[in-house]
Image (cartoon, rainbow, N blue to C red):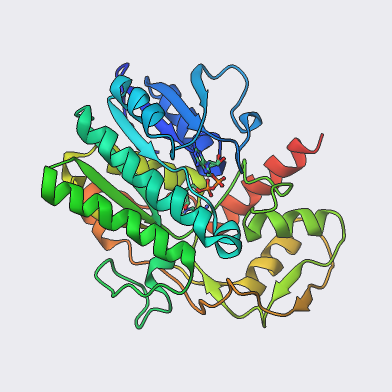
Length: 318
Ligand SMILES: NC(=O)c1ccc[n+]([C@@H]2O[C@H](COP(=O)([O-])OP(=O)(O)OC[C@H]3O[C@@H](n4cnc5c(N)ncnc54)[C@H](O)[C@@H]3O)[C@@H](O)[C@H]2O)c1
């Protein structure tokens, strides 16, 4: 884990009650920072933040410019994670547009107005569509296959435009699939790892969309938090966009098999039709840029990360 000391600085974390955001909130507080969480609790929950963690919570939306501006005035840094997820976005692109694009514009305007030291924006590997070459480098062309990838890329483009036009200090990270503790299977929008863990635990055959041969690059949440906070704090990150992943492709069927083995269950998956959002066949991100510029590499291998996630899940069911 990278040592970052916030030295009492205030970090506004939008979406700080969500899966990744709550992990960011805890890390900021445990690293000497003061956390202000802005979240509308659409998909997040305050129960994600461990009892005893001292943070300020503001229930509200990034679409509320006056509120975002008021909070940015108090903040030294902003970690912008608030977003509608791909499932909601596919059902309601208008709402995705308002939150993911409009909310990001508000964050940038507020950061510029109040001279915030840095904004880190959390983008997604979905901006690459189906890549031509693996592992995908940051200069691969972008190809938006979903309204969600359009809005995540638009947020990035706004960051870049603010950096170039107004000198607003920004950086961006493109996450591959993040998994780990606090990714709650009761949340209808949670990722595949926690869905599989819950299904296997209940002896309910997990649903595999398509043939199960599609691949993803799974990154443990602590590693993603590390990379995100480096991109927030490092002078070398300003104006840049970095992939956060592992560079390793794992098929969905082998993810299922690893989890079934870890949990000691003899269970078969059930194959169902692919969904609208399953149009990306293969994914693995090159992490050369973040490795060489920010000295970040993932520390937690997939088996170890899955074991920690299963242990967290079992504990959280008690
Ligand atoms: N988890 C992944 O694998 C992954 C992959 C790529 C990108 N990302 C990006 O990382 C960020 C965090 O994702 P996550 O997996 O933690 O998702 P999440 O849904 O758990 O977290 C998003 C948080 O933002 C909040 N939110 C949504 N709309 C809001 C609004 N209008 N105003 C204020 N808060 C709002 C939600 O309540 C939630 O707490 C998102 O920007 C997402 O696009 C995540």
